[in-house]
Length: 375
Ligand SMILES: Cc1ncc(COP(=O)(O)O)c(C=O)c1O
Image (cartoon, rainbow, N blue to C red):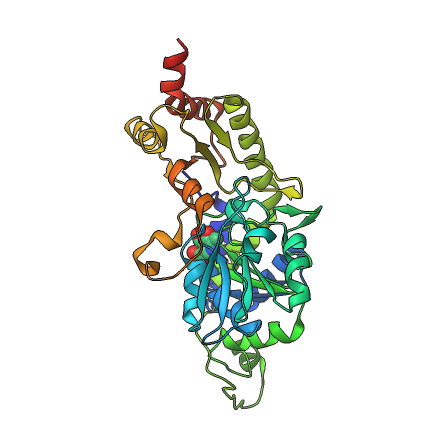
C-alpha cells in the first residue's frame, strides 16, 4: 500500500545522532523545526511525538477546553476526533464535500452553535481543504480554524504550500505519510506566543528547555508553569526527518506522476471516480482513492477481496469516526456523503518505487468484472 522511502542517507543520519551522544530532543530537533516550518511557509515549528499530540497541543493553543464544541469531519482518521475528547470537549461531526472529502462552509455552517470553540479542517488524504472559504465563514464569528495537515506535507493551496498563512497546523511523520521519522509530528504557526507555550507544554510545562539547561554553565532552577506533557521528538527522529525533507520535492513529484498514470488507466471507467486535484490547489496524492458506484459490478468490498486474492494490498477508504463504537453515542446531523465515501471507496497502493507494470496489475485486478462485462 505504502512503502516508506528510506535509504542509506537516513540510516547514516540516525547513526550520526546516536554517535553524537544527544539522542533525546536536542539540536537536530531544533534544526528540523526550522527547516520544516520554512518549507511549509510558517514562522514557527514545534516538533512533537505524533500528529495526535500535535492536534492536542494546537487545540490547547486556540483555547479549547471542557464543555466546548469543536467541529470536525467524521470522515477522518479517529485521532482527529480523539484530540477533542482529550480536552473534555465534544467533537461535532460535519459532512464533507464528495469530491475532496473535506469540510466546506455549507456543511460546517449546518453544525455551528453557541458552544463552537474551533473547527478542525482536515486536508484529507493530502487533498487541500479550502481554508480561505472556511475562514470567511468562521473568522467573522471569532472561530479559529485548526488545520489537520497530517497527510498534506507538500500539498498546495492557492499557489502556496499548505501551512503558509495557517493559523495553526498539525503534521504527521508516521510511515504511512510522505515524509516519515518513524513516528513524529509538528505544530506550525506564525504565532510566537503559541509556539513558546507549546514548546513548554510538550516538555512537562518546564520554563527552560533541556537543551538550554545543558548549554548553561551555572546551575539552573527550572519551574513548571502549567501541567504539561511528554510529547517530545528525539534527535534520532529529527535527523531522519531532515534527510526526508531534502527529498520531499522528489517524493511528491513521483507520487503525482504515479497518480497521473492511474488516472490515465482509470479515466472513463463507468461507475468509478478517482480523487483529483480541486480547483483551489494540488494534492500530494498521499492517498489515491477511488469511489465505486452502483454501476460498478460487485461494488467496493468485492473489489477489495479481488485485490487481496491477487496479492495486492489495497485498503478500504477513509474511515468515519461516527460509525465506530468509541463515538456511537455522539449525536450528529445526517452525514450522507461521509457514509457513502467510507462505504464505497478504496485506496489503491501507491509507493515511490512502484512500476508501471505494478500499476497495470492493480488496475487489471480492480477492473476485472468491468472488462469481463465489456467482452
Ligand atoms: C487526518 C489525520 N489526522 C491525524 C492522524 C494521526 O497522526 P499520527 O499517527 O502521527 O498521530 C492521522 C494519521 O493517520 C491522520 O490521517
